[in-house]
Amino acid sequence: MHITGRCHCGEVTYRAEVDENKVINCHCTDCQIISGAPFRTVVVSKPDAVTFTAAAPKEYIKIAESGNQRAQGFCANCGTALYATSVGEGERVYGLRLGAVEQADELIPKAHIWYRSHKPWLDNLNNMSAFETTPK
Image 1: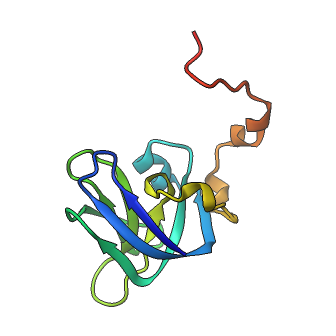
Image 2: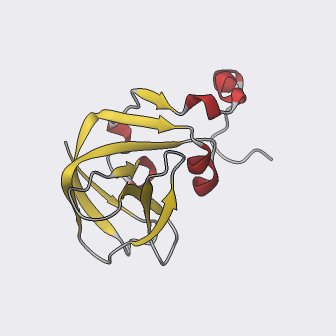
């Protein structure tokens, strides 16, 4: 599937080819801390199938629990998280952050990973009140 994406301010834009069957929710504590959310949803790109079409993203290198280095791509202007990918030479497969993908409604998560770190209250989301705007 061909997709497009952008950061909040529009400075970083991209196009990519992804596998729509590889959409996952990651509950690892690194994703929770870096995103400021209880989990992060990503779609996996085909190898070397992401092209940045405007400004280049900035990268932060983190060390995963496995010991692997992972580049975290984001907009240097607005801070929007865009992806995670490998560090160094070779093919790059991107875990594109679904919130920045323009076709996000078409990409349905198929699995949870690092579920041992999930927030237990996520199991009760269907029982919570829902509002169209901030309640007064």
